[in-house]
Length: 269
Length: 214
Image (cartoon, rainbow over all chains, first blue to last red; front, side, top):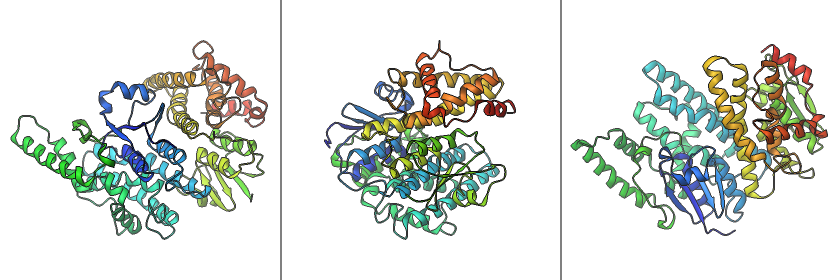
């Protein structure tokens, strides 16, 4: 399958975009990341994703594919050389799809709910929902991993990508709320998986370390054009980003990392 | 190919109907087990502890939940029947895209447009019109979403094709008309009159009674 003409419309910080990038990296596909802020409704995004107007969009020759998990499955179907992303067995495949849908439908919205929650009581309610979701994912991990390191077995697979892309934001939410959402005492295997994730070669190249992600987000949150503090945080963030560019270098220097302010205040794309 | 059971409702659920359609398309023998969702059975709770909902397909003792995931599973396991999803990776991706679109953007909006009131209803009507326009464009020039034959998107769109017109009639809220959505209207008629689909859809009278009480 020709690897020319593969582009990802997206943003570095978006967990949904990161799913696609991880899949491309797993298959060793050359691609170009075209960074954009979906909130500005750029023309290319509207043209390629008129239905949802969201990132990520994969452009493969004259084809455009939208929705992160649909793109990941497309990558797995279209590039048959390289490791499989979805498990081959139909039951395992259905199970992986089920839990990926659970991540999107039940877990991801909790990050938004936590952000919007006002007061300790409201936050406690959301913490409880996180705890319930992670207990269910702990069971999922036991069933899917079959005693191995990842949901996909010995190496990362579909569900590792689907959930793994959000681990950074979960850890950031933990730091910002001074609480444990993914708790090693309640969900030890899942927590162990989350720790192991960043040691995977593909993952560590794509996903930003949670500590650095927190600094990025805080730089955006404390944005104030006139203050000296703003200039300091921007310099700090810029130098960290420089380090991150080395640490998290996307494939073969094809990625142009641009400063996209709005995306530091991450929302669902 | 092993023992197949389908935990379904009492005949009203479009989600269960999707799975029935897929099983019948592939000619799979299965045992339907009716579930009273107000009084959930141990079997349902065992095989779908996360959502506790129907449909659940139990194949050789292993449960699979979520209707479209089940349909893809059926397509992958029973390869000898007609394909439900296309083989081409891009066509598969587009098929999955539209099925997801129907689930996330069409079903809830159109249901609320018919069954809610006030501001929520008005907002849902607008959302429905927007969503249905995309489906209208997608079906243009095609007999079914799957092409010449029923496919994954047609199965996913069973609510739009059959349930929605019935709910619309009961609630007096017309969303899809021949004037506004001529292609979708034509698809709905072809779909509901298709011999295969006709044989699987629940009785209109039963659905009318059901929705009158909602």
